[in-house]
Length: 111
Length: 115
Image (cartoon, rainbow over all chains, first blue to last red; front, side, top):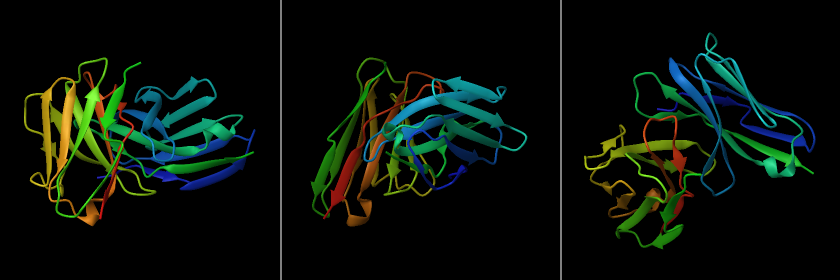
């Protein structure tokens, strides 16, 4: 079952602006991951944040995790046209041997 | 980095035929491989988890007799869609893990169109 809820479902911004996507989940997790998928392609792993971490950075990416609210956010700063893609969060649930993906956010960066 | 390939990248077949999709880990041994299905503009839905040398574990609602999974070696898993129907048309993605869910590498996907 898909436990991740992402919002917004679609986001369109101008190049150079920041993009924020949110993900909520329902159960206890070991970690949460964010992936990018270009149209018709496979997934690219972006970043993993463990349940005992609150914030993590990687280049222009900033991920936060609030386990009390069971939510995470992905911030892409200084967006570029090449950032246009769908972004998915995926949770590694405690006791489960699988990733559960959110519904995804379709991000469009307008030049 | 770890590379996972899928073959074919896209396939068109007639209704009633069977289609085999291969997933290979090219530079690491994958103890576990996962098969997902993705419909247009939707998320990935896990179909099954396969461990090398053992039977696959299917998610609820996925017919194991229709979607045959074989993980015969540490670098190859196959998904066979038997007696394919138009509703099986989808994007099938595999992922491979050398151990532990934290590291899961995804293939480029296979687009299946059943006419």
